Image (cartoon, rainbow, N blue to C red):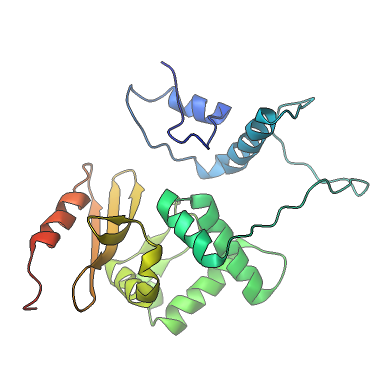
Length: 228
């Protein structure tokens, strides 16, 4: 069975091919295991470099300390502003970007170097002190959203939606509804805004094998909320 990447800009890496061997025929969304994140990023960069004519003496991805005698070859600066970054992250569900934003937030708040602990503390402080979300309503272990140890109640998501209202234009749209989905095996969510004269928010969290969130959203769209 041949494996193909669903995104032209995202190469199919050896790790992705290995994970694909366990899947049945069809279209699948594959989540990279947390302990394989480093390998995936290394293989992804290596594949892109190979496409552009670079060569490697050793293609094995490994983590090593940079030599003090090493010379800087290239430093890349992202010319997008924060809103552009968030819009792209939301559109493509980019877990890597989400985690980088968490790390950057922690670094801005507590100084260099960036770390998950600093990022968690910064976000936890914002949720509790700025939005008034009690600490028993959430748990943050990392920023990508991939870990099943992350926790967020529907009530907490509702408060987040209210705070995000001025920026709802950054969300993907379908049927004129700004929304964002979340997917883990057996867990499906969707949250967003209904287009009404007054802001109406919706949060869908389903813990089941089948996906019904789009059906629930469509039911909501058929309801006349003008009298509520």
